[in-house]
Length: 141
Image 1 (cartoon, one colour):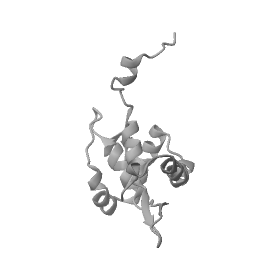
Image 2: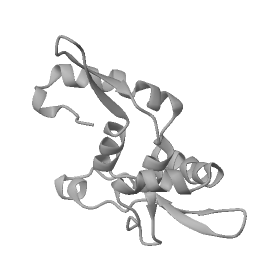
Image 3: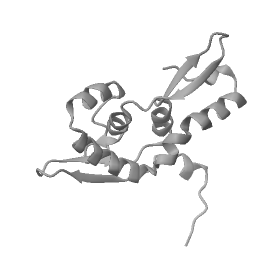
Image 4: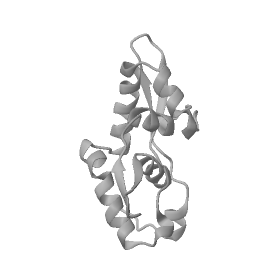
């Protein structure tokens, strides 16, 4: 039987899916789904604000460290508590092998329904959204 969710149900904390990711040597980590807020913050971290000579602002896709940024937001303990802070992405990116990082983000992308098309559409979607809103919603990078 399907239930119509009421306000209380919609605003209650949802249990996020957590999955174990195992590496070739037997080590493992846990990766979880993101909340809507975390997904928005992640997507905004992939944009770079650009100002032209006339002061007009546009956004460019800045996918440097995409993998590390996604890993930092989704790596967690077995209870779903984040292990890292957003500022840790650069250290993670510099210190973890590409193979291990790729293993983590493959699961994170699967859990969070992040496709290649999603990555490519970030700039286009943000620019449309910002054009409809006031400048107080702009992204600073």
